[in-house]
Image 1 (tube, rainbow, N blue to C red):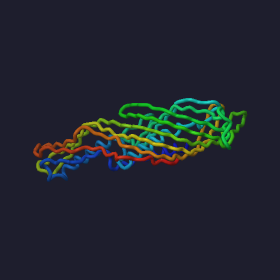
Image 2: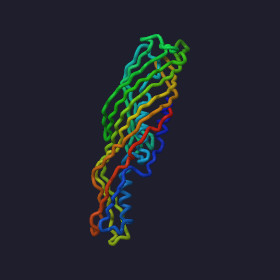
Image 3: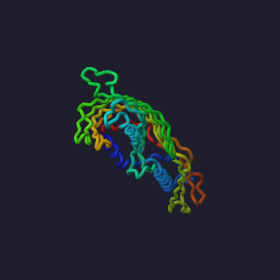
Image 4: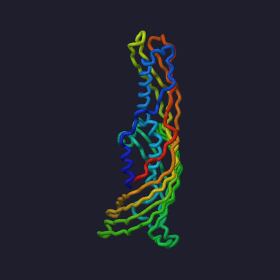
Length: 315
């Protein structure tokens, strides 16, 4: 479906001006008069930690998580290829990642991720003519109904997914198939489909961090080196719930009896939200080489924003 073109567009650079990791309540000890000399060490530590984390700011991260959760299940609802004669059953999945650059192979570095989502469904589809000939103007020889249901927990490296989904989808063939060359090339007709899909997805990226930066000063007595350090674990993620109604038209073609290609147009009408999952442990500490300015410290926070909503409505 063309909605995957939108997925590729999401590979454009994510906004990352502010970063998710911030240091507040900065305590300068007995060196409060030299705040402007010490702040560069705090700022450099912020930048160093943010370089390890998902590349988004708090204004975009939650919305990106909701978008990717929605996109991951976009093609799981129906069979868009050759029409089924009796019924079909199978498991289908999808992964959607917003990144600053396209992934290579099966690896996406965490520090390029702006949002991530995954979905799967166990799907059962059947031709409705097995139950009745039709309803009103609808000929059920041209109609299919699909049910989907799935729950799953998955962890890999530093990323954990927990998701559940349920879907109901109605597909109707508007134009009949045709073929040439004894069926070697077959057009499978034009289909319209709509339904409902409910998704609950919890994603958590747990990133151990051990970062230290040192800044030299020339305007403090003794010209000390200022070192800022953070050692701890960053948990960044979201819990997404969404209810989506797709409106789609699709076509497919079978080539040489065994290969089937499909495409189409679709729009998703979605309501839902993403709530942030954010936590830190470990202190921010400041030391200076002269040993004359006492204890300096700061409080680290992870600012993901409170909530976001799916913004992808086109396909």
